[in-house]
Length: 442
Image 1: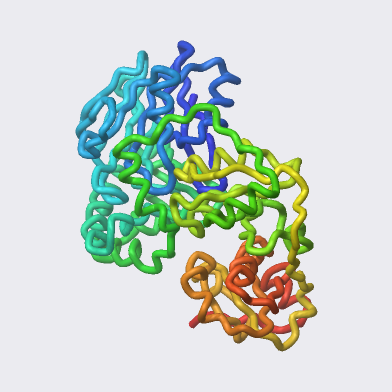
Image 2 (image 1 turned 60 degrees about the horizontal axis):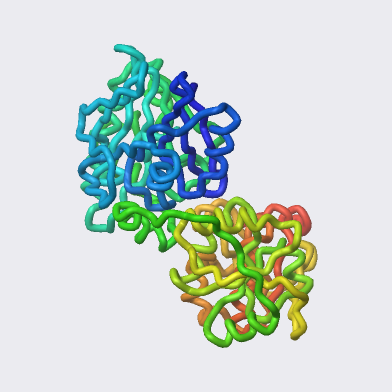
């Protein structure tokens, strides 16, 4: 039995394989092991093997933690030159799981040392863990090792996908990256597939030649959080083991002292609560599945940060998301009423936007699909470096629903902008309220 453990925020799937004797194989588990452990405990399983398909850029691996806490054997590519104890696998190597066999297939492309893992029952292939090689409807991006390697890795990806396509049509495809991932997975609900289905529908497998494949794969690659450039090496060295993390309790006086020393307030309350009242200078990053991505995108690594949350928001969720991308500089949380000044940011209904400047902070692809005519477009991830470009005049910030817009508004307010509003809704709501057409990129 193969159980997918989906991280909706990062758009990834880890896998837990029941080996039939109380042991399990974990594939591409992140450092936030809460969901995977819950699945294992519910089924009475102990993780005996932890396999990583590649040196992940979007999260820290949980394999070293599973080795330390569960005695799991870590299985990974020899080409990855990991600096901690593991079974270093080459193309064609096999690992006996006890009744099942895991065969390593070299499938470079997404990364240079990428492996896929073919799961065998005797001679029969049950499925293949494809990581960031073949994914549902696409293949993962090849630009994370730098622009100078993008094309050569894309050509390696072409060969890897054709190698996987040579497997039998009924073989299950279990990718790591899925919808919502910054690793170029297309939108859609499907997390798994089969070789036959991908051969029939995947535009990259339908590309007539290598050059066409490379153009399709590398055209329109979107932005990604800057921590992606650091985590592969952190995974090669091996993430530090986690003990019992907790948010340290901080008084208002201690918070003021830490802010004076350069700490940053991260307010994880819902956007509406932040809009009503917040501590001046706080950055709004609402606690939701995408919290980790925006925390890592907007804060420099090592920056001490202080959490402001509602009592009903789960501290373990905040810590789990932060730790899986290596953001361990949390100084604690404010745990007593704030006795200083507060600020607010009005939220406007779509019928009240009027003739003021509109700042759209969605991703490029979202903006191109339809936007308020005349809106200035700056992706949220780029905004900290481009705040000075935003005129100090009344501005309405918008995204798809309001969370990213509130984050952007908080960044503007932190930089000294005082006439900032947030659209309550998205471009579709504006079009419905005004009866006007959205603009589109040619």
